[in-house]
Length: 71
Image 1: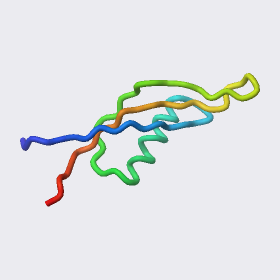
Image 2 (image 1 turned 60 degrees about the horizontal axis):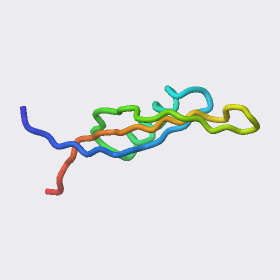
Image 3 (image 1 turned 180 degrees about the vertical axis):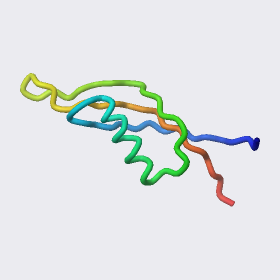
């Protein structure tokens, strides 16, 4: 098995329905521009509030992907 190097970034996803959907939205959105996604780790959950009601759920993630150095 070849050795690999991974890069880690932090992203935030949002959803009007749940933290799980917020995380899924973040990963799927990042996957459109980042190749070889590997691991997503939830690091923080929060909500936005409007008029004393939950307006949206937000999930902050670290996301790792395989690093491909320039040839």
